[in-house]
Image (cartoon, rainbow, N blue to C red; front, side, top):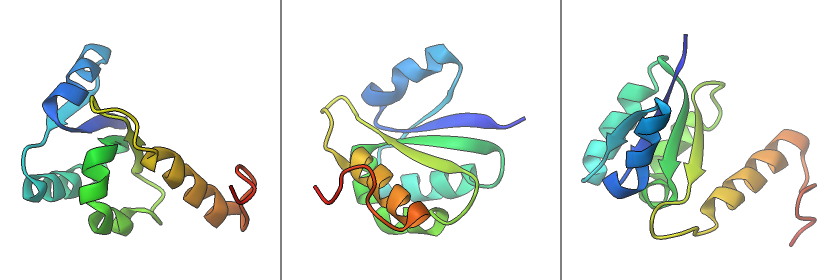
Length: 106
């Protein structure tokens, strides 16, 4: 059975533990890259990652974009929504269907 993980700063992800998700507070970017690699070994089907951490790990995340699992989903952190999550969804939809059917170029 697959699991769900959450990566990000402690304040942003701590509440997910109450839902039964595995949380991994990250302090350093190097730790984040190593932890992401270890989580993507097949145990986790979904990895939520804060938008702030996603911005710092964008090149690392490119390795996983074409894989079926894990699905890496950006979520807003305590600092608020940066819009990166929506941009990620837009990019994925464009790749899947070949055009921007959600935002129509906006």
